[in-house]
Image (cartoon, helix red, strand yellow):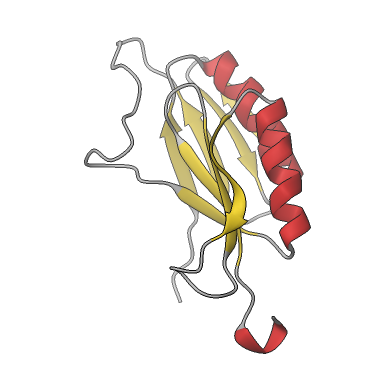
Amino acid sequence: MALLDHLGITVDDLERGRAQFHPVLTALGYRSGGEDDHSISWNNGDETEIILYTWDEDSGPHRHGRVGWQHLAWAMDTREEVDRLHAVALDAGWTAVREPKEYPRYSDRYYASFVEDADGIRIEFMYNPPREQA
């Protein structure tokens, strides 16, 4: 089975990106990795790496709903973890797109929140246990 190895995300301001992503990624178990003038990374052991990039050109913020990035969802072990990560993101300057709530249109067990950073990058924290655990 192929697993996600790394994800690169371009942001307008690398330091602002660090301030918004670092608290969320460390709360998810990632650790700071390398950095240079144009990138910062976090990794989860020897597994998935998240990399923020910035470039000298002005491309404007990402617009949700346009072709390209939609959102990245992290599966949490409990509803309380969804709530906790949502609060961590808000404290780090992310904007709530959707507060934590149930989404019965996805499943009768689906509970999630959505946040967006200053560049319009959207992430989701979700809890959707297998039916036998619910």
